[in-house]
Length: 105
Image (cartoon, rainbow, N blue to C red; front, side, top):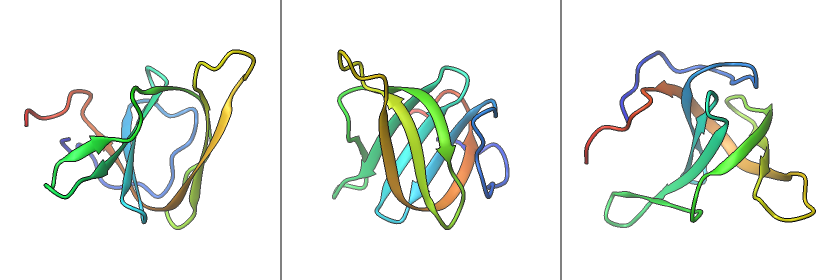
């Protein structure tokens, strides 16, 4: 994905745009704050990123997201009777705003 702006030290729930949050465990979270969607990917042995989940999840809220601390998200995984699921990440290494459409592979 193409980086559009300088890295940020935190991401707030009321921000607009698309952000990639990289964590120390090698997972990258793509948070689309406009569409309210989150997708997790991890780098595979071939150097290409692979999705960890079968599809993106609805982003209910960004509870905390700052460099140097674990990120906590509230997501809707479309499970009957479950309002939201708390997802906690590894320590956040960086937060970058990216273009809406990924670069061609």
